[in-house]
Length: 223
Image (cartoon, rainbow, N blue to C red):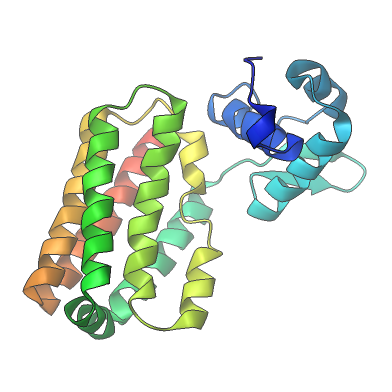
């Protein structure tokens, strides 16, 4: 395993990142049982922080604990992803008037959207490793969370944040082309432009198109 900077991270953080990397790179496969002793030998980290990292990942849904069978990498199912995207579509299109109003009245919100788009395009145009891959999906998630946050509904925001909207990213690493990723950011830009124009009809169309296209890409790359 590569040398990691323990000084700036806890051992739990180190184990957590190593586990996510192994799941993403398919060192640990969906459905595979996780043997903590083997991870201890692989990562050079004691079993306690590995167990704590696994508990964090159980909460996130990347691994699951099965009574009398131990812990295994969760198998992602297309039906679950499809349901999440349907929920996203409902939430993201329901509050359009409130979202447009917040965007219109709050210059800080406009700046956050703009900064997100600039950084996102920079990352995908210069992507070189797994860290850039994760950063791409972090920025994608940030864009949509900012969008929903503009609704002003805190309860909806908590529900949206708990959906695991981008967990699928751990299962399609290396399968989606650069052009497809760039196209997704271009769709974010179209959403931003519709917000700036205060065009509700166009905004709804852009959101629907983005969600539908994302579902198609994930279905194609996952199955």
